[in-house]
Image (cartoon, rainbow, N blue to C red; front, side):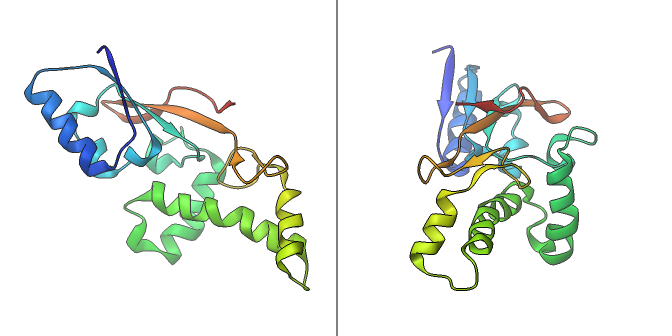
Length: 168
């Protein structure tokens, strides 16, 4: 195969990448966001790989000057001061924030007399939410919410954006 799509855990991907190197097999790699693991990204076999990301990414991940301002602010104002122990894994730290943001938005919109029904109505009314870690959330068509992804490429200088957000 000229290309391999990896949708796995970081440990399984590392074993596979190491085996690729042992065999001197160098396919193009397209990987899911689960492989944005700091230890895996240091593996030389990941050079050139394209990785999908559903989050805005900070400079600490994609290099100074390449980060999204919203992600940079969340990392510096929330992760670093309040969760320094997870700052070494910024993607997962920011993913947690990103998953919580629409929840908080729906809780606010549901009002002080929160019920399951009022929460679901509020959640289903979230459309075009783009002030958080996701580029554009919309829950009016169902519970998926996110309909966009960006591609990153592993380079000798680290991860670099290879696309803008692609909406599907």
